[in-house]
Length: 305
Image 1 (cartoon, rainbow, N blue to C red):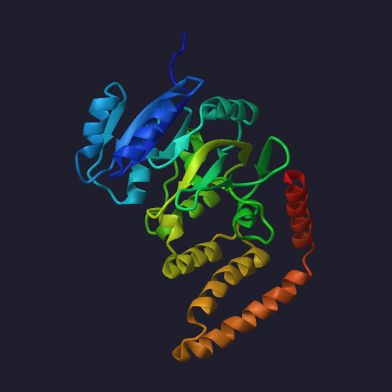
Image 2: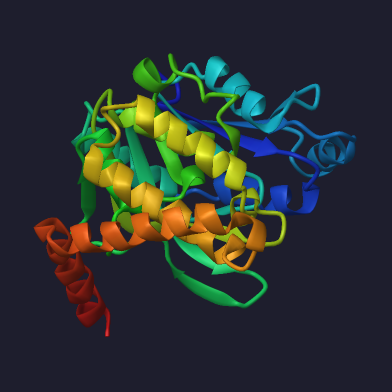
């Protein structure tokens, strides 16, 4: 009888033992089995290790030498040995049906390179809670890198699957590495590369809580990393065509104009960016795909009322 786990769940931890305790317990409380849990401690002190000894002595703990964040991700990817793996974060909470639902997804779509779980996005400061993405049906099929890119940056989109809720097929994703020079948006670059290697399936049912708080790196704006990501998609022809590239430029140029519009030393550049924004608005008025996306978004809002 084969008792090898079909899934390895890595909980990536860094100096947050109390929130990690909740994350780990939520994984141990899964209704379905067949997985191996590995706690990857990348902390700068011993608090995580002490918490693990006190509360989860039987759970596998791997200590790291306080690696940079992306190197920590890659270290876990390199160690994945099961058919699938998940890189869960220490500040999120896994719903009790996560493993069972992801097993259903893997059985139904055995050729997919990854599955993304929907989540309840919880703003801890404001006490707000909403789904990370809206969809009709049980799943959303992402059939190309360009489709995934549009879900992130296209007009009238209905949200995205959060990065910590992805389950990856090791035979494909285990051979890839997150680009450590890609800045804070390197995770999106990695997902786009995976989407160019095969389909990605998003599961519509929320299976976790994705917590927003003051320490979330994704909430901190970085113009340098935005422009670095622009350079990546210019080189990745599978990720974005002319329309998608224009949408992303519109996305970041609006932020630059909003931030620098009153700076007298940058007015020549701001005029150039404003001309681009005006022309891009005109191009968008002629795109039928934008109207289709808008109607789909409206239908979802009507359904949820």
